[in-house]
Length: 452
Ligand SMILES: Cc1cc2nc3c(=O)[nH]c(=O)nc-3n(C[C@H](O)[C@H](O)[C@H](O)COP(=O)(O)OP(=O)(O)OC[C@H]3O[C@@H](n4cnc5c(N)ncnc54)[C@H](O)[C@@H]3O)c2cc1C
Ligand code: SF4
Ligand code: SF4
Ligand code: SF4
Image 1 (cartoon, rainbow, N blue to C red):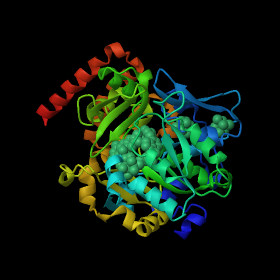
Image 2: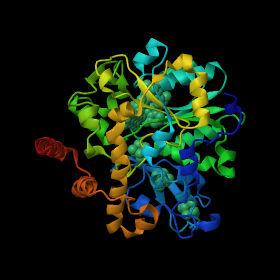
Image 3: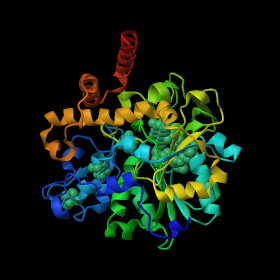
């Protein structure tokens, strides 16, 4: 625990690897290649709007704003102001060289849940993240936690804040499957007291950008208050059109929503919209209007998530995700899978065992829960990125690279699906036609089942 009083450590092998790995902008000897910026990525929407590039840009040439047509945040680069220093390329998570399977193999795995049954029940999966934060606050290992919450002028679009009390941590429990304004994270860190030690909870892309910044002296000066990083597993963040479309199916006007709870009460929980007039509209997680079918549909998949290759927050100290284990299928209380990626993470998991009720989890079990995600974001990503850069030559120096081993089956699958995804993305389907891809996707699924 004493580790929290020092600078954040990066001693997990894969964390060192992904922080120190040669990047698209690197030249031998640590010099940076000129004429390299994130502009080609941003222009092709392969940008999740994490704001890491804007935070490091010395020329103030990058803006991050909400793109209504895409339903998510994204960066824009002012070419006239850009000095082509290449710093933004160094921190961009879309160029993350992590290999998820290696990172998981190096991590310590647990099945875990919050010791407090109320937290376990009300949280996203097993409440491990919130319970750990409460335990860190109680032991004064941290002074606050950087968490997301809804509110303000746009309740559907969450923002970061510093939770300094237990009530605030509990209030921020649950998963928000919506784009977050990430510039608020940097604002919150800057506004925190100079001596404060903060925990950060975030998605793998944000975690990666922060970790890359913490690897530099200037980054540590700005973000050194972040003492521990907790990542959430992530397959995607649906764009905001997903939530709006779902609300439409539930006959709820989006402007009437005061708060969305995407994972309320129990496992896997339900999606709940609390309206300004006090009424609550609810749909089960696995219903036709719920997460499994609607929010997880590729119709609402941002292009950045399609090209992301870190589902397990490999650059975090600790990562937590859902426990989709067959043996827990009938469990209604909830469990999380927790990975200790770094020495600091493993130290904290040991020190807070009583709060987290950990039990052993084998690699076989982990893969039964998350093997598809690991495959899609590992070999799937490599084949996808390679195929895409055949056409988009400007991206080759950034994303390029032939997969270490080309698998004809993976290549075929990606080659068949990519035009469908890109066409859907380009069409930015107006709500009038959104039913069509759902119908076609269902047909495709049935055809795939028959083929198998
Ligand atoms: C967009 C998104 C996609 C995810 N995809 C997957 C997946 O594919 N597979 C999987 O196994 N798990 C996924 N998760 C993680 C999962 O939903 C749970 O967050 C995780 O299991 C931890 O559960 P918990 O009960 O311990 O968390 P809780 O105790 O409920 O705490 C969750 C914490 O996460 C913070 N948080 C919520 N939403 C966000 C957000 N959008 N950005 C940053 N912080 C946030 C909250 O402030 C809270 O502190 C995803 C989470 C999110 C937010
Ligand atoms: S290359 Fe340098 S100056 Fe240009 S946008 Fe990136 S960080 Fe800013
Ligand atoms: S993903 Fe993040 S770092 Fe990369 S271009 Fe977008 S905002 Fe910048
Ligand atoms: S899938 Fe990747 S890019 Fe998309 S939100 Fe998750 S971590 Fe970020």
